[in-house]
Length: 206
Ligand code: IMP
Image 1 (cartoon, rainbow, N blue to C red):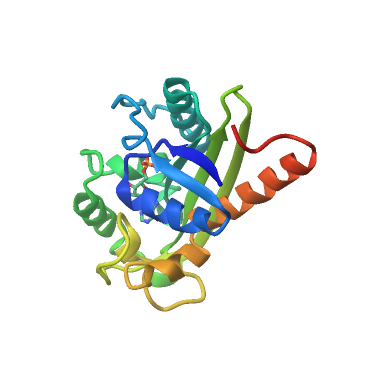
Image 2: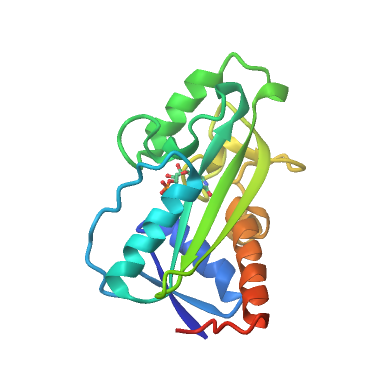
């Protein structure tokens, strides 16, 4: 089983990444458990791809091992794609889910349900110690509701109803979210890219 360092400090994301990648035979080690110094990697990119790469490369440089990073967020169509890369700090303070949800609800409250569309996006980057990079993007489309529903998940989950369902990600069982989420889609694509890389003769383990 390959050991991979997770660049994220968000325990919700790590839990999801661990659960999904365990099925692929990967073992994810959170960066704090791997003894990586507690430095902040500035997320000043304008795309999920840029920020995901910055996090993965920055942590790989500190630990010298294969590192995986997720940069993710919610794009809302009637807000021209906001909060996008600013999802974690939409209301100002980094990672204040309640304040972010309150701001989102206030901005979309006059918009009819059919137009309250959007998607979660996750860009996963894996960086190898030689600097080689494998990137994968995953998305899940859905609608936004105006009142939080469900206590599972994190972030905007209680406001997001994925297409084809009538419950929010906050009401999904974690294992069901992990089958259809943006993060799952990105990780499945990552796995396919790693398999292609492996069949081209490249080692997967450090
Ligand atoms: P990041 O750490 O900069 O990638 O910020 C990601 C932010 O996007 C989180 O703080 C959440 O607000 C939001 N987000 C990303 N993925 C999810 C998800 O699976 N559910 C709910 N919110 C998410």
